[in-house]
Image (tube, rainbow, N blue to C red):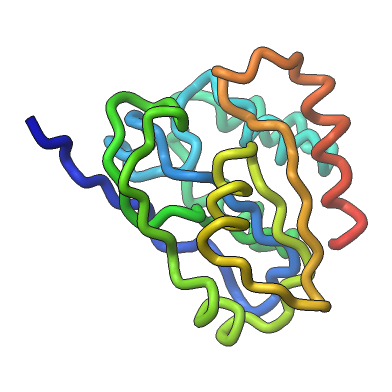
Length: 172
């Protein structure tokens, strides 16, 4: 039995973006809802709000990601872009360890279109390792940072994840 091919989303990005946060591939719930980091136990959105001391914004937006457009705008207003390393793959469930037959997104053209990017921040090791292995685009003007995954599969405490993620602030 052949597994279904799944596809990632278009990037959330604009010309002011300086930091590009890269996941591997959206999980099952994110794909179903067509929203980045839709799983309620994923720490991504909570970390983004905490980085900018916007706990009020987080508490107002926790219920079922009902204000997804505001969340996307929150990132863009802070010069943060969002995308995935993988364009398509097959995977049973949501775990990165189950990803097979991955095809990567077109970073060469993304970098041409958005020349002001200064940092690629990888949300977990899977996307970082695939990027290094399959894309290998080197640029003196773009830094790379491997951060702990915000996934609920990563059992690191929220406060510890947040401490690591604060490293992106110096690029904004």
